Image 1 (cartoon, rainbow, N blue to C red):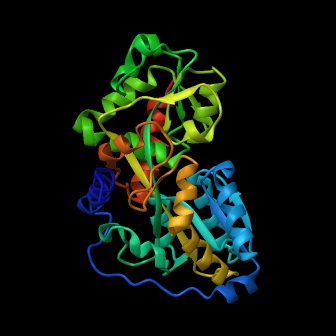
Image 2: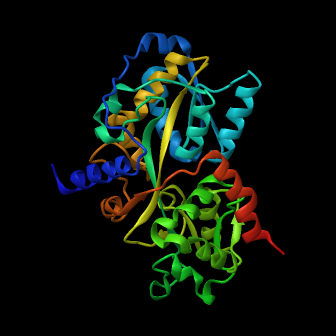
Image 3: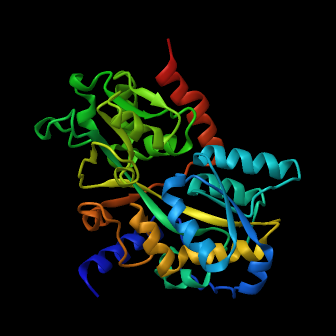
Length: 340
């Protein structure tokens, strides 16, 4: 086993320490491929950008003859749509994908049923969820991305604290933390590095007058277009978006695991189970990684410079409760970023 694989297993083990996983035994469930083919299609609500899912979906459709209908929104919008449909008694999804915070909210409201894809048994034991209701398939490290045509190497911010320099005033882009749950979670988790002073950093960042966008994906577009030379978003986007963009190498990266879950009232349950299994298989995980994703299958890395060095620096984010999320987004961050 090489060092990269050892590092990856070590990082996945950190999740257990963070209290977000279990150490007990779980059991995968068999897949009925013929029944899945009879379902004919699977409807997926996800936060992953369509261009990154297109090759995976094309391969799945070719292999099984099952159509994938994919609706994309950021994690907040995915959960809002799924919850709205569920509460109206008309769930339109078979599979839901999103960050841990919103997945837990949906799980607790009963949107999912237990399903453990067989291939997920290959994942490190520490990374498996106790109740088998949500399945990890990728992790999302956050860094500073920058326009390589606009920012010289000597001027690069090396840490988030460097973004507080006057030279970056009005030149930073990030998601609006009053609208985007992952960004609210990210800012809240800065306490892992800054302790009680994390909110002081957030206030100072707001004074930099950042260009606020809807979610993490548009940050990269804004950087490429030159509307802001630097921004806070996922590392993976340097592979998923074409343009003069790269990322800042750091010692530590706040990182959010993402999960897929089977709808409790899926209209196409067998196709959904096969889809989840394909995502977790070595074949599926390699395809996902090729699109820039850091996946949960040991030893598989994206074609991003120094990707194997990113994994040892990942620090997995904790999740505010639903009430904490609400307070952060509607009170704390609204006062900080929009107070007049």
